[in-house]
Length: 122
Image (cartoon, rainbow, N blue to C red; front, side):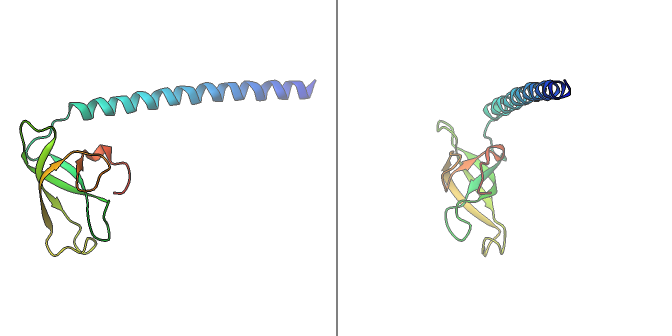
């Protein structure tokens, strides 16, 4: 009788945990969709802060902050920007690097993306 009660309590606890996990997954999915909507609403303008994925050196592939200086109208998400380098870490002689006609891509080196989209390598 005691073992049956323990098993029943354990099964009820497992069921409650499964419900809680499902609710958490739903909440996280809703949050992710909200962030995706926010990113789609964001527009690239002069003075936008973005991430630029480095193309060369020891830290190639990692992200650095960049300030958009010009947006090319008529071209989908193409801009010129000043990349803010991390001094000695990036072995940079100058703190800024110019990048002209940079297009958007979340993963490709030499491209820009929004900071919230950073999927590693930063």
